[in-house]
Image (cartoon, rainbow, N blue to C red; front, side, top):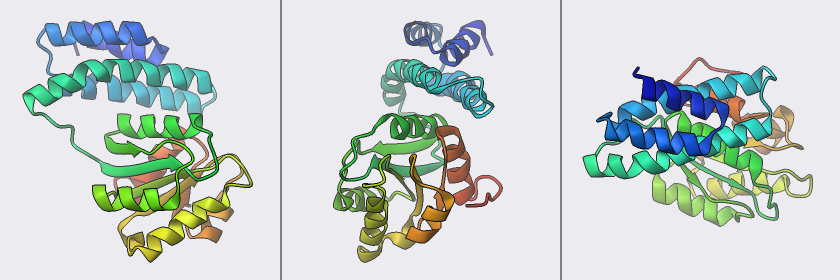
Length: 220
């Protein structure tokens, strides 16, 4: 890996958005293929960030800054990918959102960013998303994973509402459903018919990969 890509990876790990954007532009100017830069610098950089969070060395603000750094770099690389007609190899298609009645965004957005960094095509529907919007997006995109976030005890039941809507639409067998949020738990996931629960963004990546058979199976 050349020096610019090494610096770009470190900028992501350190959560330095401006440096990441500038280094991404430098990499392109030096003739580095955008896809190669993403795979060599951004993806492993975010993996390091996830590992640091998992072991307690990083906290949510660190994750947010790293995600911002990656997004700034991707904003440089994505037009170049389109111009070269290159596409990242997709690990899967994820539709994710915070369920109806709930406007909490940070945790859901971190999961979306980490999944995107890990090679998933992510459709982030935002917050306060009604069940029929999830159904519509799964049908439209052919998604094979649905991520449902809820941070309130008063809204966590709407995770089940989405699962029921997917069943009624005949789409439940097409997708794996993972839930998260402060009041949720593995027991609650089982109770409402979800396929899995994840406590944080880094764990969510591993759980989704396991659900799709990309990595070794993990317990719900």
